[in-house]
Image 1 (cartoon, helix red, strand yellow):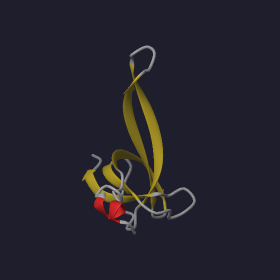
Image 2 (cartoon, one colour):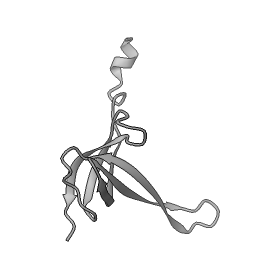
Image 3 (spheres, helix red, strand yellow):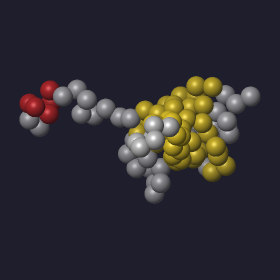
Image 4 (cartoon, one colour):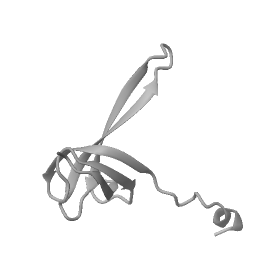
Amino acid sequence: MTEDMAATPDRNRRKHRDGVVVSASMDRTAVVLLTERVRHRSYGKIVRRYKRLYVHDENNTLGVGDRVRIAETRPISKLKRWRLVEILERAR
């Protein structure tokens, strides 16, 4: 490892996202919906973009409607690349 690589603190930083659980029926896996609001390039209107991510939930604690924080991690299965960090708010 060179000095330049060691000097950059952001090199090993992982992405964090907040989303809502839309499915928790699989074993140790939940599907989290991320909503991103972006401005349309040509028209300027605010549009919503959605992304569904598969999240590793080791203890099967998540339920549909929970707001969660997830973090990027090594590949756990074919589709799972995220893990649960914390539950921000339980569904009512």
